[in-house]
Length: 253
Image (tube, rainbow, N blue to C red; front, side):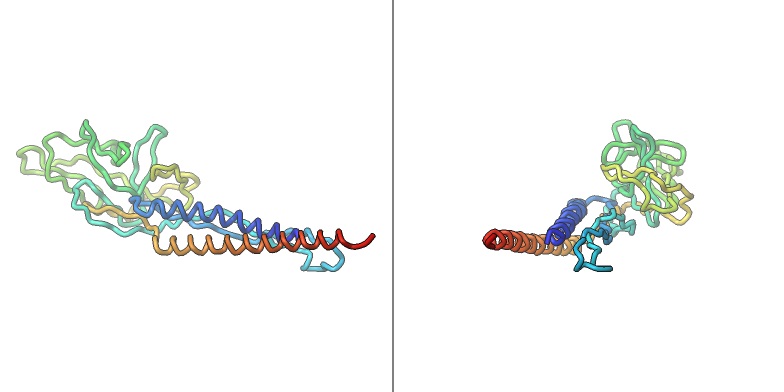
């Protein structure tokens, strides 16, 4: 009887953590470049049954354990913005940005210029080119970004293009090994950098979150129903336990 309570409790604990993962996905459904997380579960066996009527495989008690989470690194849909500084990567590469802790990576290409003309992301971090931060002149106009990330402009009344830099795109052997840092940024983690030879830049587009809102809401309802069903089961087991104790107390000595 106690095993049933413990098994139900183990499932409730994993459901609670799964709900946290789903809620985070839903909260970031409109975050540019966000990659959804999903829970991993496995069976955890323990041999707590000791009575003689539990023999062989029946001695094993099967609990539920959430082994961790995995990240869906698939691309999100691209949305046209027509903003010349907005960029989306077609491929598996990441933009490189400079923060206080060093170089970090993101798929969020919502860029703008700061007060000194440097290209920055939505949090004000410098966007890195192959030669470092990218700086524009006050008279620059007609910004054009080639698929390989090369940025050209027309400066003042000039009729020929001037190069302002080339967007640095970074690929990894296994993007799922990148470490989430918050603010839509990633650290290298245990992943290894490699040349981004198959990725291109799409100017005037933003990559949206790859979260499937309908699917996540469906999973949220399923988790809530499972949690409620297990809570009812645990209440029934508790009532049965209480009833058994009351009846045993009434047995004459």
